[in-house]
Structure formats: C-alpha cells, structure tokens
Image (tube, rainbow, N blue to C red; front, side, top):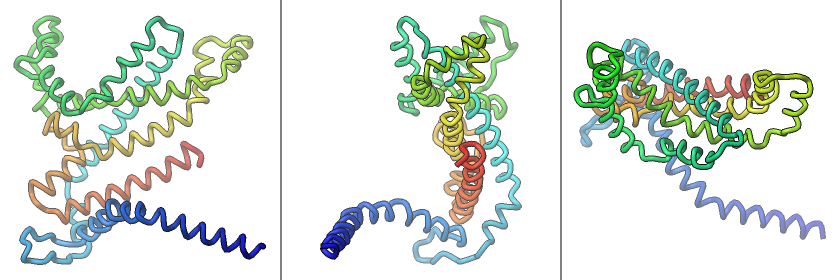
Length: 292
C-alpha cells in the first residue's frame, strides 16, 4: 500500500513538472537568454557588420567604463534623481493616504482623481507637461513671470540642464505618488482602531499617535515601497527621455551609448554593472530595512 502511495506521488510530481515545463521554457527564452546574451556582449566589441563576427576583448569594456567621467556623472545624477523622487513620492503618498483615510465627504471621488496621473499613458502626460512648461507659450512661465512676477525672465524648463533636472523630478513625483498612496492606504485600513483608542486614553496627541502607533504599522509597507521605487527609478528611461534630453540619467546614457555611438558592447557592460549595483543595494536594504 505504501509503495503504491509513493509511486502515485512520484507520478504526480512528474506530471506537475511536465505541466510547468512549457511556462519555464518560455520564461527562460524571454528572460534568461537575453540576460546571458547581454553579459556575453559586455565582453565583446560588437560588430555592426553581419559578415564580421564580434571580437572578444575580455574586460576592456569594463575598464573603459571605470575611466569614463560621463558614466560616473550619470551615476551621480541618477542617484540624486532616484533619492529625491522616491522620498518625494513616498511622502506625498503618505500624506494623501492619511488625509483620505479619514471620514471625508466625497473621499471616494478624491481617491479616484488621485489615481489619474498613475493610470494615464505616460506619453500623453509628457505632451501635456511639455505644453505647460514650454518656455514661449507655456502656462507655467506665463503664471510665474507675467502674472505673479516670481521670476524676471522666462525659464527654459525643457532645454536648460538645471531646470529640466527639477522638472523630471517633479514629473516623476506627481506621476508615481498615487502608487504609494494606494499601497499605504490599503495598509492604513487594516490598522487596528483599538491601538489608536488606547493611545488616546494614554493622552497621546495626533502627532504621537501617528509616530508611535500608525507609522510602526506602516513601516514594512513603506520600506518595501521605497525599495521597489529605488530599483525602478534607478533604471528610469522613458519619461525622462521623452520629457527632455538634458538630464543624463544612466538609462539615457546607456541608450545613447548603444544607439548614438553604436557601442553595444560598452552599453551591455553598463547594464551588467548597474544590475550588480542594484543587487547589492537590494540585499542590504532587505536585510536592514525589511529585516528578512
């Protein structure tokens, strides 16, 4: 009887492996093969001529990368961009979640409106922002210069490196904070109300209730959210490149290396190096922040 049961379990396990095999092969073909091929490219001088094979050059691309001042500048810009946007979006989402978690007339509609920047297509949002911040006829310059007199001259938000850097930061915070809002609000609605009541009985004011009761309950969600946003924003390319060409985050630098100078091997080395950096960050963050 025991042998029959064991043989049945073994055949059931084989059937399970057989059923997941197509999905595993598909994932391997779509994800694992491009990753491994990209690693291989990073050790080669890639030829654009299909009749000439790639030339294996070992670690030369990585040596070039370490000596490239433009690469380190893009890393610095990316770190600044990532830290500011992650903190800004998280704080904005936290504030909105705390506000709309209270009894408020029409809060269902406010919640829906807040989600619009996140669910709308990025390309349409970029076009709207480019129109708003146009240095000639944009409503932002018109309001700040002509109406309010905050600035004496119109600011070139789209083509000035300094102004465009803050523009892409503002855009990302506005575009992404609804995601933080949803995550934090979902957790807020599961916080035990008796904890707040006990804090009130002990004489805690609103700030102390938030600091000692609400925030500890939200710490895991906020930590997870910030780690995810750090990873995603460190690789950010699409909205930055669409909005302006003057902010050399590492995603834009990699794209220009691959498709402007056509140095595909060096671009592959950049992506491999970034993957290693992000993995180190994730391992440290998961241990220190999430306590896993």
